[in-house]
Length: 197
Image (tube, rainbow, N blue to C red):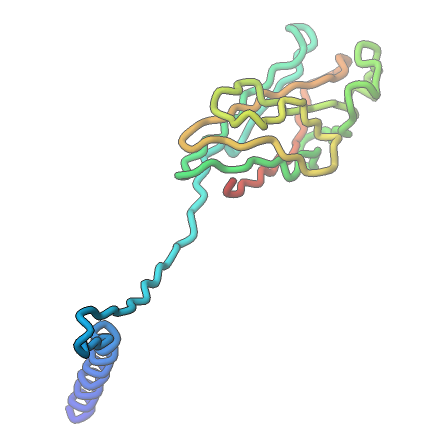
């Protein structure tokens, strides 16, 4: 019983000390006195605090493509990136490359590196020129890069500045072989980097 009373008393004293400290700071004044000159000036320091902006972007966590040699070749889903931030953001592709996780590991190459229409079964199952491209320009600043970014490119690439509350869409494009003897899967990792513009 005595311990509870001591704890409550200490808590009350601590609360009073904290209140008096904060009140003292808030009530601090600069006293100015007129000595007959008819005017007095007083200085007030005005401090501002700026909180960091939260970058809020929505994008899918999965995008898919399908290579269908008999039905027209390549079909890829679009990848929408929506800037929900209160300011424009810079969009960069930080990483885009083949990864282990499917039944095939595809080696990333540029379209000019292969004779795609004449790839053998073995080469069709090894090589792809998979790329991303911005095709709808209305929500981007004029600096947007409309070149195809291929997974074979091992460097990060600045895409452009996406305006606030706007969606930028990436289309998948590809060059690929046509000789497949079964249904296979492959995996690529795509990493975006978003920063305040």
